[in-house]
Picture 1 (cartoon, helix red, strand yellow):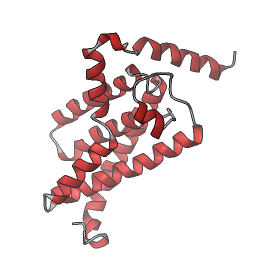
Picture 2: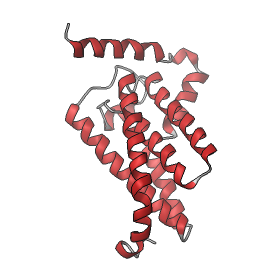
Picture 3: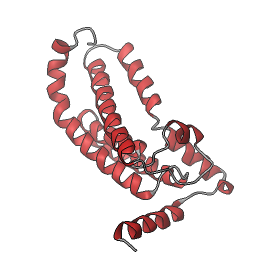
Length: 186
């Protein structure tokens, strides 16, 4: 057996141990709620609302977060369509299975970790700890609901952490330049 096949088999075994069966009722519903909490459209709608109903630094921050999450989405989708790893077999999450049939890497795990790291710039460090715990739960939920394999989530977290660190480096620069580049947005 080739090394890649062995790794994939181990990944499938680890993932199978994490899966929540529907018989677990409340735990399954809670995992679904946590997983949905990082859906991209919720974050986009939230950031647009923040942008619409605020002025100054908060409005600029909403724009920059939206840009960071958009760049992340492009990168994750690029990798997904390049590698085309199918999602695990499962019944739950048909909207994800139809709109994005590819599993690797997990966009939800990447987005959650990026949000946790970007929060370091603007919030008390305790928020980072809470958001980091949330990001870990989001990733867990994606495997528990059979939408991803463990390696999809692990790589998603890594991409998200790198994306968040890069955002922390570049967002302050963009904050200074944003009014000159996009005066109608600020």
